[in-house]
Length: 325
Image (cartoon, rainbow, N blue to C red; front, side):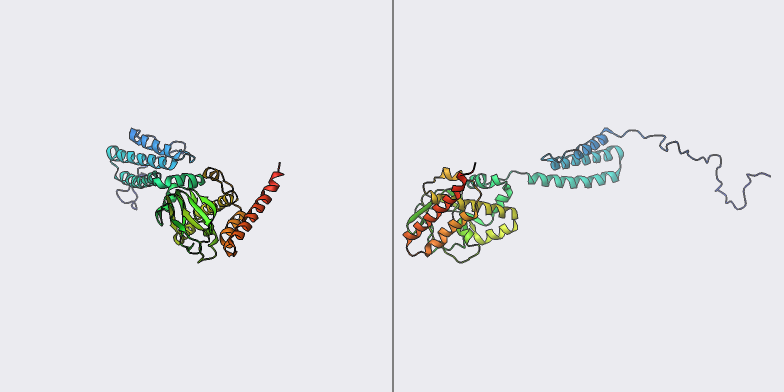
């Protein structure tokens, strides 16, 4: 009997070929015939991907280089898939990746663009804000939305004691010189790149509706940067970093004014060298001068009492320092 006879249960056309049915041994690879190496464009595209991924993050422009190399790699993949492989799916996917990386690349380059600061404000930025690492774009936002540049001719008043409200503005002198006096008594000068009304700004954070208790007059033709007090306060609340910068700058300015009171002959060059951290006692001393001297009936007695108080406090501060090694 023929053992290879067709079983009646086996349908025609589905006869297994037992002679050719051989299993692949486990010790042999399934890729016996490798395909030919792809075109050079394919390998250059992968080299771009590899170079972009190994760029160290410590490099300043590493994200721009990464997005640029990824864009080049995607473009080369599109060329390879279109001209040498005729693979529509590869071309479509890399077209999507190319668009995404190009958008990122353009955005990063746009963020790195040089910020043009107005010529009138460049010295202010370089002297006060750049040493504190304030970015140019943040300074531009600070000075470009809710402030303006105003001028005063020599002899015009910026503020009059007991008349001008302190709630409206905060200003920095850009050009010229101003003179601060109390009831005709000279107190100190204000030079460029200094706040005009920093003591009032600090003292009125808790009390509103107060008036200037000193007179501030332009000694030369002056130009100053003026903020709206309310809008500036709102903006600083949304920028915590800049809020801390303003706290430091205003405190330092108050300290400089205190030194000017102790030494009325302090000039602009000497005031530039005062870079000490503002202390609480110094700030309170200047605010005490501008806010409590007016309560004394006799202006001459009030001025002398204040000067005696500041000179004694300065001697107490400098006394222990003399004994330090």
